[in-house]
Structures are given as structure tokens and as C-alpha cells.
Amino acid sequence: MLHAVVMAGGAGTRFWPQSRRARPKQFLALLGGRTMLQATVDRLGTVVPVERVVVATTTHLAESVAEQLPDLPRGSILVEPCKRDTAPCIGLAAERLLRDDPEAVMAVMPADHVIRPDDVFQGAIRLAVAMVEEAPARMVTFGIRPTYPAETFGYIERDAPLAPPPNAPADWPRAAAYRVRKFHEKPKAKIAGEYIKAGTYYWNSGIFVWKARTILDAIGRFQPKIRERLDRIAAAADWPDAEVVLRREFEAIEPISIDRGVMERADNVAVIEAPFAWDDVGSWRALERLHDADAQGNVVDAARHVELATRGTIVRCDRPDHVVVTLGVRDLVVIVTPDATLVADKHDEESIREITRQLDKRGWREYL
Image 1: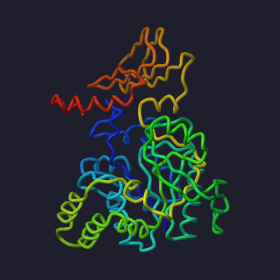
Image 2: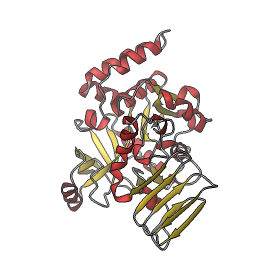
Image 3: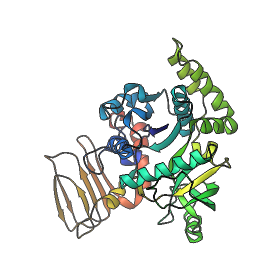
Image 4: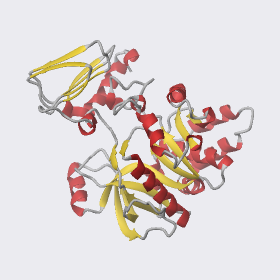
């Protein structure tokens, strides 16, 4: 049976000041009235009903997940006692699913991406499931055809094409699938440019489909110490001190991503060229891609804004009674919240991470 694992423990520091420790990016409504977490679960539709969705998050975000997803069974919130990156998170979720469904298939995805349209995404998931059912040891991921030489994404290099599985759904999107030759870490711009010219590389979307048993076996093969601790957690699931064991064993795991820990080493990975539109919404500049700009190239998400001689600027304010005025500026990001305001060069988006470090250094943790 197909289950979805939505990873919702990220910090989203490049979306400060709206993204905070208690309300990170996935809890923001950046496109429409639904938050990114809610939209991720909505997107699954009938392919994975809510009773088969698991949301993995951290202790201090669990209540927010429950509030945002009232239809999600409380037992479906998988609470990690601390952050240990995606490989331990996915392994913990796989162990959880196998307790109730020994044949569980997992669709794993972050909670903070924008993907459109929903029906094409659902068809792509069904295609990936068919590929896994055809070859149960196969692990499937989705690659995004790159549109510029991004340095902030990992890349997937494709190999030989794969024929559609005989059990492909009747309405499957006509998406090409390939064996994976190699995963590549985030490159410098020059190397990324070479990838684009080659035409055989994709951005790594971070969305995967595989059997829960397959990914656990792969973690055991490539990260045996992690698997040992996950097995101890699973064995103690029905013990009175299960939470104690979970905390002790999980905290002892060395953090590592599923890409570096497993996918870069595995030899049974396939990539589907994503037939859907995808945006990882990595910084405030994503609003330029998600919203229409005015004649001066400004993107405004504010109830009251006056622009005078303003060009190429992003303005967002979540206070309906607050007016934002921009005068004689260009290429800025202006974000207004009740207790903090950001004014920054939109081309220097990576430096926004430094803001949170500076606030922490000064002891102003109420703004984090």
C-alpha cells in the first residue's frame, strides 16, 4: 500500500523575518490561502488519503502540525526528538510504516515546495509506484530539468532510458525515465553551466518513491550504525520506556542526508523527468516566480503599499493596517512583520542566513 511521508522539520532561515523557529517556512502561506504544509498534503489528493500520510517533524513543531492538519490522525505525526537530517528521518518513518504494513511503499517529499498542477503530480507518483512494483529493489526519484546554472541544488546525472513499466497507470504522464548514473553535490556555477549544456543532468527535487523495506535495507548497507539504532527504536516501540529509547538512540545518530548517506552510493536508482512544474521556494525571490509582477517589475503582497519610482522590488507585509511606502529604490526585498522588518538587496539572498546568526549572537532570541 502507498503511504506518504512529508518532511516538515526545516528551519527556512532565508525567509526571516516571517519564518521563525516556532513558525518556519512550511507553515507560511506564500501562494494562496493554504500554507505550504497544507498544500503539500492537499496535493496528494486521493492517491494517498490523509489516513496514510505521516508528517515527520521536530518536538517544538508537532503542535503546529496538528493545528494546521486537523484531519491528520495524531498518531501520524512522527516526532523526532532532535534534528538529524533526512536519512535518519526517512529511516525512522520506514520503521514506523513497516509495523503496520510489511509491504509499504513510501512517497517521500519535503513540506515546503510548490508543485503544479496537482493532477500531473499525482500521475507522476502513480508512475513511480508502478516502477517500484515492477522492480521492488528499485528506488525512484524525480529530476527537474534545470533552467539556469544553480549552485544551490544537487544534480542527478541520467544514464540509459527505461521503458514504461507494463503496469503503468492508464493516465500516466508521458514522462521519460532513466537509470541514474550519478548524484552530484552542489556545484560551482561554471560546472553547473556544463551540466546544462550536456542536457543529461537534472536538479535533485528531493522527492522519492520506494518500498519501506528497500530504503531500510539500503540504510543498513551504507549506514549500518544508523540502521542499528533505528532497529533498537523499532524493537522498543511497545515498551513503557519507548520514548526514552527513541531519544537516546536518535540523539546518538550522526546527521547525514539521504542523498549523501544512501543515494550517492546506491546502484538501483531511477529518475523520472518531472512532468510537473516545481519550485523549492528557497528564498524571498521565489515570490517573483510565483506571483505576477506589475509594470515596474515589483511583486507586492501587502494590503497597503505605495510605490514611487520603485522597480524590481519584492514587498510583503502581513499587517492589514500597516502601509508600506517604497520611494526611489530598486531590487530590494522588503518584508514587514509586527516585530521585525527586513530591507535587503534581493540579489544577496544567501546573506539573509547571517541575520539569524547575528540575532543569536546578540542574544535577541525572541526574534528567531
